[in-house]
Length: 117
Image (cartoon, rainbow, N blue to C red; front, top):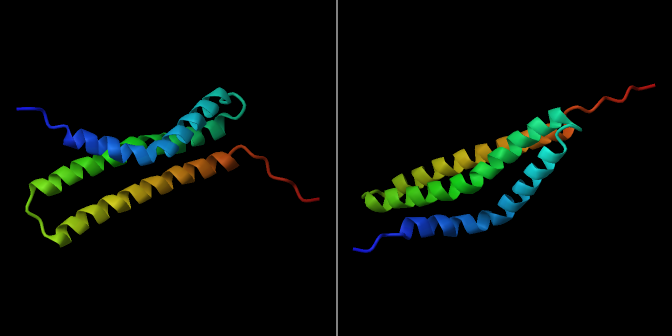
């Protein structure tokens, strides 16, 4: 019996739309590490945000492939399937928002305030 690569192929196909984000995230991580000494507090925030974004580039397609396999292997109603995918979508949305919060934190951390004269 030949090995079943369908779940791996599903992961790879889910990874393809993530490639632009993955590339930009890797470039951002390289720039952040290269400029660490110039702005260490901003670099920490940036690493957190970009790290979450990088993680999600792999986690989202992996979770989608695993969820699809789970749903196919069970006899579930359409409402149950919708609930599973909605829950996962909300989780991804929260994690994406967290990555943006950290990146915004990187933009404003370490800046001195202008004094009004």
